[in-house]
Length: 370
Image (cartoon, rainbow, N blue to C red):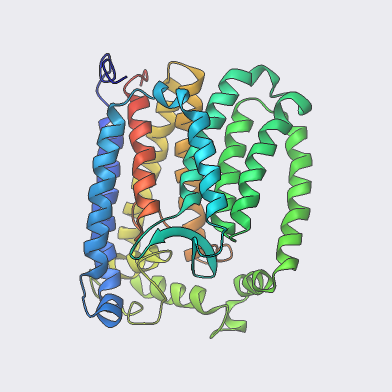
């Protein structure tokens, strides 16, 4: 099966590779800087999160370089198996005793310290399958019955299972990514307008059905109305970014990580970047993400076939949407969603799957005319 796996490929996009490796380095440094206070308090080991992040990073980078060598067409052959496996994992995580609850969501499967988050696998699995489907059925995508609705049924089945955990943030990233793919495939705008109306109704239902979501919306609009409750995270995040100024307080000099900003090494790590490295440091990170988006789009446009174009676009869209949501939360533009910042936030499943996705994108670049 692997006899001709590594032949007939060009060099990968080194610009993209350097950007990703730069983000990883920034992430490792900032995970340690933002977490050592909490790590020392909770585990009596200030290097606890750093050691685990280095382990995740090592495994993820190794997987990225290996996957970069595998022709992306290989994933086309196993798209159905990958998607089915992802659905099985999403069902397993909902079983009491199997799924693990963290942060109010039953989103994890694992034993002891080792665990995986099936929704992260679903994001990549659905991108691969939907890319295959759209490449083979693009001529039907303008048809509501033959193309648009079948695509939506698949996407919203996955979304529904994720919402049962519940994990609204991951579900929103998944849906927006898939909508970007379907729109690029040529779906009619009129169909999207109808979907937007149904989505608004569904979103209102989700908010009304769970009081904590209403509280989050209220906190977003006026966090100082409940500064010690639902508005606490947003306020502390803004308190971190504000004093950073142009140059920041200096690496390791954050004050908010001293038990003010909860879990600063995960969803709100960009706030610590703003506090310690200032506007310049935050801008540097944003420029790296902008370069990643630019190279990803060029790779997609230069891919030799429709599957490669959709696959590259889906991966870069997923990463970009997640970045936009995370940073918008940190600076108070949208409600708290529980989304990590790719490459930078502490985490195993998220970082590893992100690097695996980049490995696929780098392989597409080896065939792309960029």
